[in-house]
Amino acid sequence: MSDEAGRVEPGLRLARAGLITNALLAVGKGLAGVVGNSFALVADSVESIGDILGSLVVWSGLRVSVQRPDREHPYGHGKAEPIAAAVVGVMLLLAGAGIIIQSVRGILSPHPPPEAWTLLVLVGVIVIKEGFFRRVLQVAAETNSDVMRADAWHHRSDAISSLAAFVGIGASVVIGPQLWWADEAAASVAGVLIIINGLSVMRPALHDLMDGALDADLLARVREVAESVSGVHSTEKLFARRVGSRIWIDLHVQADAQMSLYDAHELGHRVTHEIRASIPLVENVLVHMEPSVGLSDEVR
Image 1 (cartoon, one colour):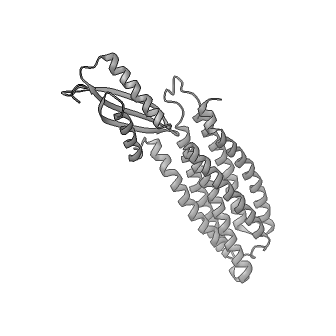
Image 2: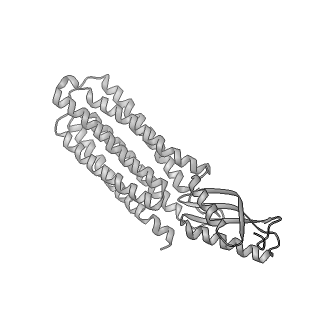
Image 3: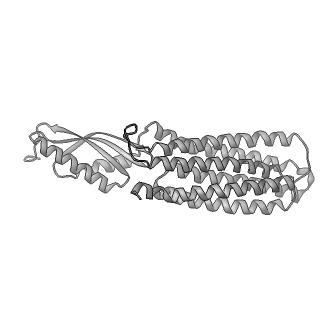
């Protein structure tokens, strides 16, 4: 197994586990919602069906991202990760909007309040989904994967919507039938929170797809490492972008103008090696050597 394939393997296992879990939850919540007269549970069930598609997107994105570079994709397939994360973000937006629309319709149509036992179903869903959120977020931090972060927040959005449903159903059960609408009102709040989560997932994904600038501290670290290499006078232009969870760097290095082409070439290799050794996320460094006019190693 390649290093890159090994990196995403925990994410692939969690995506498969999420797929199975979401399928079981979709069936369980749907049946409980229909039998227990809870729109919030039915809405949760519909969202879980969307989660199944989301898990497939995450799984596919991770699988594609570890494919080796080829003639048509010389920089590799790492962009599959932010693409998958953006798709998950869109799915969250659609799920949130759909829940809000259906909740408003339910509020406008009086109906009997949900059964009290549906609260137990929601407690189970909250525990399972919060557990998935924490585990997937941990793996996302370990692998620096945006698509895994998106998947983690997808699980958290489920926990949030289920918690809101719990509050709504609990209010209608404790206070009485006059709060029959609390179920739908709670689902509406959950829909808004899910939309906010969707936007937070899409923002970094779109940033990476547009080759947005990386963290200033990371760039400063790249310069520090490069300028610590013997023979390097200074660094100039520095461009960096993310390709999936990996970083590609273009760097201009100034060195002794009297240096031979061979020595300049070797110095560029040393700079590349030191940066990759010091910053493991760096996949590739393209060093452009430039003469440091008027300054030689002898007088530096």
